[in-house]
Length: 115
Image (tube, rainbow, N blue to C red):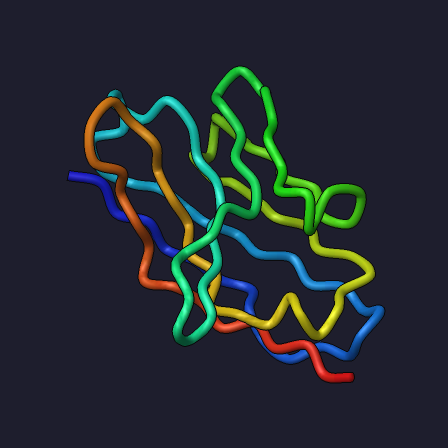
């Protein structure tokens, strides 16, 4: 089993920055990548960014150029640096551990961007 613990959410003004962290623990041999999704009420969870252990990244068009994902394989931790934030970035952000099979998910952390 894998546990994902997120931190770093909160309230920020538009144009500001936040950094999310997600630390993975447990049986990590099956994890091939990590990343972030986000969800707002009434909508499906949507991709924000993912990164493989080798460093290959994938971003949604909505955050490309503003958010940066990185991974520290030694610490089994993935980070999401969010800059120039917009009110539409407001959501619950979920960390994902990707594997062949059902992904692992964190408990979510609220990010609110005020205008």
